Length: 403
Ligand code: CTP
Image (cartoon, rainbow, N blue to C red):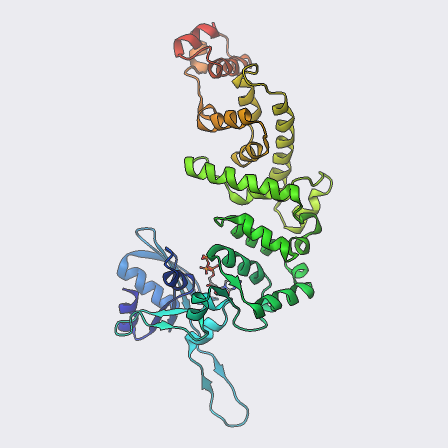
């Protein structure tokens, strides 16, 4: 439909980037990016009108997002015509605008376009040897200043390399080492580093990326305290296992991957040093507060769990230890517990205990003649404890106990 609309208006329209790359790789990708040789915003508006949807336009960048009624998002960009002025009276040279658009991108594998106008539908536009690089499973930059222009591309190179099981090409690797030698990383803002780290944590195998970063000295370059030692690698390995296990079994509560893995990446850093890391990564005040609080809660819970004995200790005690802790912290505790029965009980907490609720409320307490007051909290807490420990399963039992 986008191609037909392009033909109607008389503009060439291309699908570009990851969408095209993933077609050649045979991997699913639902994020469609379009580039229009014309006006992207006008195109987006007419596209939305034609298919049913709304448009968010950024006039400064001449880009737009179309959100179709079925929820599908399509990004539309404008391939600007770039004119190169020559001295003297030589004419202005117009370069093919899609080529310029693709040339600004990070790697050859991402610099592919697919014609979608009718008549040329499905023609691959490959100026930089992307098809060959995909065949040879290589990540390669388009030009030697790519990492100087944008050092976050170093992390992107690693992310794509590990995701597709490719190899960063020889020259590209030299450029990465050169960029690291120039300390380009220290100039990168914490926000941008954090953003890339989050993308890495969202990958299927974040640890592979982190190990590659460590190998290339990037962890150190971000902050010396982040260097991965054996202990952290071991913890991260466990975290990946526990996270995969959790994803397989549960949708809720959803785990925010970076909140989980950052715990492993910073394991062993002392409380008075952790601010250096959160500062470098430019955590917001709230993120920093939550993170420090989570680390404290985990520390406390680990101590308490050491004294938790299967068969002797009550499940309600486990509930009290775990209940205040967000799911990322719970998974971290699971990864750190060496005792099999503790893992089993945490798993029981995730499956069932965390959702336990009692069948009695304040109104019921009033009805059986208890004066309202702070005592209600105490009573309801105790009923909860009793229910978890199997001493007051039904509403009837709970009312009796309250009396
Ligand atoms: N891009 C770039 N330099 C960056 C970030 C992005 O050149 N630092 C380009 C890439 O060529 C990419 C496009 O912008 O194809 C869109 O970026 P993004 O959505 O991050 O990339 P995808 O390739 O779609 O990655 P993913 O599969 O992870 O969504």
